[in-house]
Length: 140
Image 1: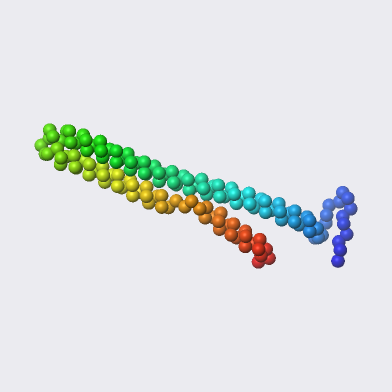
Image 2: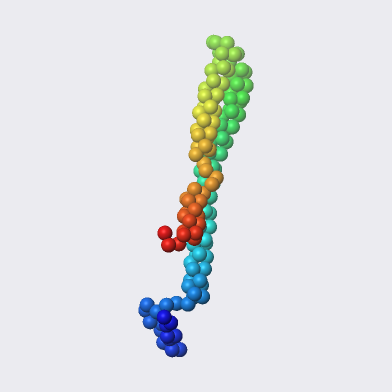
């Protein structure tokens, strides 16, 4: 059964079949839009993961600063501790132990946050798999 082509200047009536070329053009256009959206989703996911990685790196920085303070207070405690009632060595060890605990806590928090960072954009991968499945079997 063939359809009658519309007359020039008239709109195509509803329900009339489109040509294969028109259908391929529509599908191609839709696929281009779909892939652009997938790329934008991947960019958004990577930005989000980079933010989380930055926060974890900040915790590592805090641990490094606390480690620096351990050395600073070890030196200060050794000098000032000699004049106190207790031995200077014990005073230095107490201050150093406090800063060592702070450094350990910051390191552990940074490490825990870094483990939650995923470099792979999970949602994009999942939707791309769905798109590939649909492209293989569009009628399912």
